[in-house]
Length: 306
Image 1 (cartoon, helix red, strand yellow):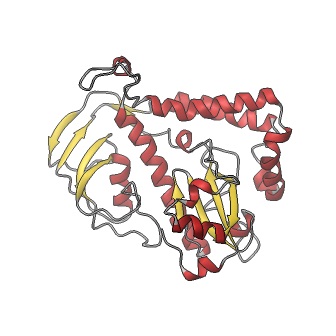
Image 2 (image 1 turned 60 degrees about the vertical axis):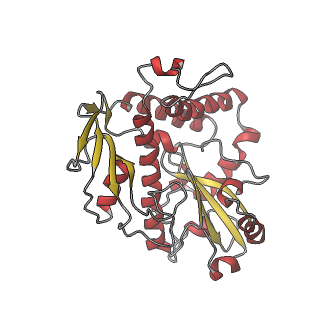
């Protein structure tokens, strides 16, 4: 997205990253049966599936990327969307009329045990590394300092556990649509991942789309609460023009409290400081057609949570 004149005049760009975004999105109704192809189905937000529907008429904030396309542009006609995306369209006031559906009529909270165990492990490990669950609410500055110091002062064994937890949360979702690997694969052949009962691209799409919708909903509320719009978004990271280099520079409200639209905290689904860069560098990135959200960390690294 381009920068408004007021944004270009800001001295800094600050990025916020959603903690364990895929894990936070994992508590939803997921398919437990094979799909059925249906024509002109009535949309049911409780039914996991893919829907061929035209969402080009859905009104979204033009200062935010559209949640319905990969590049953030407005849809131009019918396309296939997961239940999570179509349900969000209804939340925004649309009355979708699907042309087709590939639907799963048996469903349940498939990932609930996975979510509960990984969340508990993540929260406990972060506490062992000096970032307890309630720290951000009690002392936001102390929370930001503790998060910044984790890699340099944290116990190596606990850091290794933290990495394993993050990779499990991210990798489990990726495995649901594992593609062919190796040079010996020939197009048209089946590959080993297809034989796993957990290989399910729809399940992966539902989790990822739920994370996308969750972030977009928070960005809408952020704009309403603070007047700030994210000018760059990538996966679970959003970047804002800021008067200073700290997360608190964009989260603070006029009365001195912090907005809860993007709430600081260690719990999955809350946000942490991802990084900041001078706005002049961000303008150069945009001129090169690079996404600042990918490079907001010092040195241009991409978040391990992405």
